[in-house]
Image 1 (cartoon, rainbow, N blue to C red):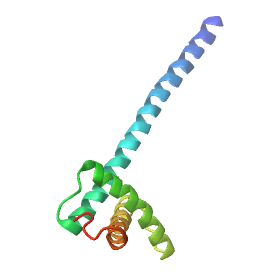
Image 2: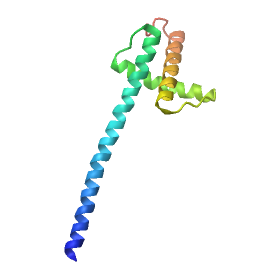
Image 3: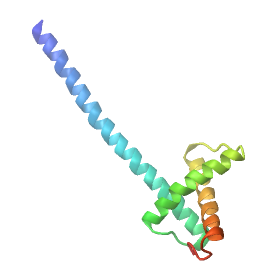
Image 4: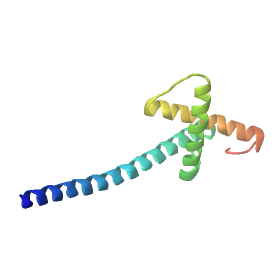
Length: 112
Protein backbone atom coordinates (compact mmCIF):
# COMPACT_ATOMS: atom_id res chain seq x y z
CA UNK A 1 0.00 0.00 0.00
CA UNK A 2 2.82 2.41 0.86
CA UNK A 3 4.57 1.58 -2.41
CA UNK A 4 1.40 2.39 -4.38
CA UNK A 5 1.03 5.70 -2.54
CA UNK A 6 4.69 6.51 -3.22
CA UNK A 7 4.25 5.65 -6.92
CA UNK A 8 1.20 7.92 -7.16
CA UNK A 9 3.09 10.79 -5.49
CA UNK A 10 6.05 10.32 -7.86
CA UNK A 11 3.76 10.26 -10.92
CA UNK A 12 1.98 13.42 -9.77
CA UNK A 13 5.36 15.07 -9.24
CA UNK A 14 6.57 14.07 -12.70
CA UNK A 15 3.34 15.30 -14.26
CA UNK A 16 3.63 18.62 -12.40
CA UNK A 17 7.28 19.08 -13.40
CA UNK A 18 6.67 18.28 -17.07
CA UNK A 19 3.59 20.48 -17.32
CA UNK A 20 5.43 23.34 -15.62
CA UNK A 21 8.35 23.13 -18.03
CA UNK A 22 6.11 22.91 -21.10
CA UNK A 23 3.91 25.70 -19.75
CA UNK A 24 6.98 27.92 -19.35
CA UNK A 25 8.17 27.22 -22.89
CA UNK A 26 4.64 27.72 -24.24
CA UNK A 27 4.65 31.16 -22.61
CA UNK A 28 8.02 32.00 -24.13
CA UNK A 29 6.88 30.75 -27.55
CA UNK A 30 3.74 32.88 -27.29
CA UNK A 31 5.80 35.98 -26.53
CA UNK A 32 8.18 35.30 -29.41
CA UNK A 33 5.25 34.76 -31.77
CA UNK A 34 3.65 38.03 -30.63
CA UNK A 35 6.85 40.00 -31.23
CA UNK A 36 7.21 38.39 -34.67
CA UNK A 37 3.66 39.49 -35.53
CA UNK A 38 4.49 43.05 -34.38
CA UNK A 39 7.59 42.98 -36.59
CA UNK A 40 5.51 41.79 -39.55
CA UNK A 41 2.97 44.59 -38.99
CA UNK A 42 5.71 47.23 -38.82
CA UNK A 43 7.46 45.84 -41.87
CA UNK A 44 4.21 45.81 -43.90
CA UNK A 45 3.44 49.40 -42.87
CA UNK A 46 6.98 50.40 -43.82
CA UNK A 47 6.64 48.71 -47.20
CA UNK A 48 3.38 50.57 -47.78
CA UNK A 49 4.76 53.98 -46.80
CA UNK A 50 8.39 53.97 -47.82
CA UNK A 51 9.14 50.75 -49.68
CA UNK A 52 11.16 49.14 -46.87
CA UNK A 53 10.91 48.35 -43.19
CA UNK A 54 12.38 50.25 -40.24
CA UNK A 55 14.62 47.50 -38.92
CA UNK A 56 13.64 44.76 -36.46
CA UNK A 57 13.28 46.97 -33.39
CA UNK A 58 11.56 49.79 -35.28
CA UNK A 59 9.21 47.33 -36.98
CA UNK A 60 8.32 45.71 -33.65
CA UNK A 61 7.69 49.08 -31.97
CA UNK A 62 5.64 50.30 -34.91
CA UNK A 63 3.70 47.03 -34.94
CA UNK A 64 2.90 47.34 -31.24
CA UNK A 65 1.80 50.97 -31.57
CA UNK A 66 -0.08 50.20 -34.75
CA UNK A 67 -1.89 47.34 -33.09
CA UNK A 68 -3.05 49.60 -30.28
CA UNK A 69 -4.11 52.44 -32.57
CA UNK A 70 -5.70 50.06 -35.06
CA UNK A 71 -7.77 48.28 -32.42
CA UNK A 72 -9.00 51.61 -31.05
CA UNK A 73 -9.87 53.05 -34.46
CA UNK A 74 -11.50 49.88 -35.77
CA UNK A 75 -13.38 49.51 -32.47
CA UNK A 76 -14.75 53.05 -32.77
CA UNK A 77 -15.83 52.30 -36.33
CA UNK A 78 -17.50 49.09 -35.17
CA UNK A 79 -15.32 46.87 -37.33
CA UNK A 80 -14.44 43.71 -35.47
CA UNK A 81 -11.58 41.90 -37.11
CA UNK A 82 -10.60 38.60 -35.63
CA UNK A 83 -7.93 36.02 -36.03
CA UNK A 84 -4.35 36.42 -37.07
CA UNK A 85 -5.06 37.98 -40.47
CA UNK A 86 -7.52 40.46 -38.96
CA UNK A 87 -4.99 41.37 -36.28
CA UNK A 88 -2.32 42.00 -38.91
CA UNK A 89 -4.66 44.08 -41.10
CA UNK A 90 -5.82 46.13 -38.10
CA UNK A 91 -2.23 46.61 -36.97
CA UNK A 92 -1.08 47.80 -40.40
CA UNK A 93 -4.01 50.24 -40.61
CA UNK A 94 -3.15 51.52 -37.13
CA UNK A 95 0.57 51.80 -37.94
CA UNK A 96 -0.15 53.84 -41.07
CA UNK A 97 -2.46 56.12 -39.06
CA UNK A 98 0.20 56.42 -36.33
CA UNK A 99 2.93 57.43 -38.79
CA UNK A 100 0.57 59.87 -40.49
CA UNK A 101 -0.28 61.50 -37.14
CA UNK A 102 3.37 61.74 -36.09
CA UNK A 103 4.27 63.31 -39.43
CA UNK A 104 1.35 65.72 -39.12
CA UNK A 105 1.98 66.77 -35.52
CA UNK A 106 5.70 66.44 -35.01
CA UNK A 107 8.02 65.95 -37.96
CA UNK A 108 7.05 65.89 -41.62
CA UNK A 109 10.15 63.81 -42.47
CA UNK A 110 9.50 61.18 -39.79
CA UNK A 111 9.80 57.60 -41.08
CA UNK A 112 10.53 58.51 -44.70
